[in-house]
Length: 362
Ligand SMILES: Nc1nc2c(c(=O)[nH]1)N[C@H]1C(S)=C(S)[C@@H](COP(=O)(O)O)O[C@H]1N2
Ligand SMILES: [Mo]
Image (cartoon, rainbow, N blue to C red; front, side, top):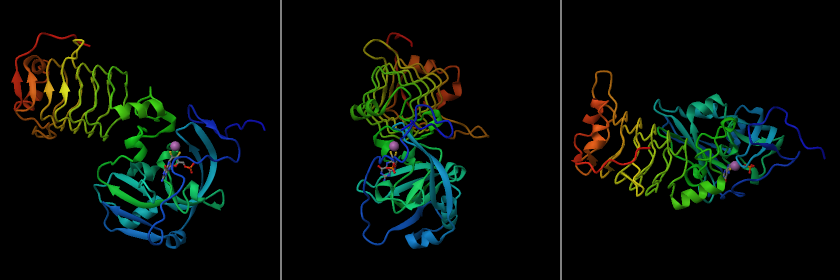
C-alpha cells in the first residue's frame, strides 16, 4: 500500500496513520453510569442543565471534518464528526461573567478530565459528538458521546462525556496534572509536554521523583501543578510558568528562575539560597505577585527587577505577596531590589538577616 500523504500540511513531528486505522489511546472503557447516561453542565452558571442522550440528539446537529493529532505523534485527517455545538449547550446554562475555564469530566474509573479556556472552546467551535464517519462512535472511541476540540492535541477531546464544569479558575486535567502533558496542547507549537526538551517518558520520571536538579527546563509550563517538595537545585528555569502552582517546601537553591512567572504560587517553606556548589538563586525579573512566601528563605539571592506585588491605578497595593516574620531575607538580597524601591515595601514584614559572603552569580 502506498504510504498516505497528507491532505493539508501536518503539524511538526506528526505522521499520518495508515488509511482506515484509528488507534485507541488512553482508557478503553467507560464506567457504566448508575442511571441513564446524561450530560450535564454545572459550576459557575446561571442554572445547571442536564440532557439525556435522546434530548441531546434532538438538538440541531453539526457535521464537521476534523484533523486528529495525538501527542504520541500520529495524525488522522478529515474525520467527519457529527454532534452538537458546545456553544449551544453553554448558552443553555448561562456561564457567569467570571467564568473562564471549562472542565470536561468522564464516566470512567479514574473520573478522567481535561480542561480548556472557555474563549478557546468558542473560537475553536468545540462540540460534543455522537458519530464519526457516519457511524455511531464506538465505545473505545468515546461512545455514546465525547468532546471534540478541533485544533488541539486529541488529549483535550474527552471520551464518555458525563459533566461539563464551568470554572472561574483553571483545574488541570488527568494527563496534565499527573503525566506532564502541556496544558496548552497546541500541535502547531508542539505543546506536548511540560518543557520542549522532554518526552513522555522523561517527564513521567521527573514528576515521579519531583527532581529537576541541574536540568535545563527552559520554557517549562507548570501553572497550577502540585509540585510540593520539588527539588530544583541548580535547575535552569528561566521564564518558567509556575502561576498558582503548589511549590511548598521546594528547594530552589542555585536555581535560575530569571523572568519566571510565580504569580500566586504557594511557596511556603521554599528555599532560594546558595547551593552546595556556591551558586546563588537568580530571581531577576521574576514575578512573585500574590505568592505565599511565609517560611521562605531568600538568602544570597539576586532579585534585581523582581516583582512582589502590583498596584492599582491610584497606587494602592493590589496583588501583594504574603510575607511574615517567618520569611527570611538577607540584606544583600534585599539590596539587589534597590532599582525598584516600591517592591521592597512588599517585603517589609520579613525577618532581615545579615548577609553571608557573596556567592557565584549565574
Ligand atoms: N475519558 C478519557 N478520555 C480521553 C482519554 C482517556 O484516557 N480517557 N485519553 C485522551 C487521549 S490522550 C487521546 S489521544 C484521545 C484518544 O481518543 P481515541 O482513543 O478515540 O483515539 O482521547 C483522549 N480522551
Ligand atoms: Mo493522546
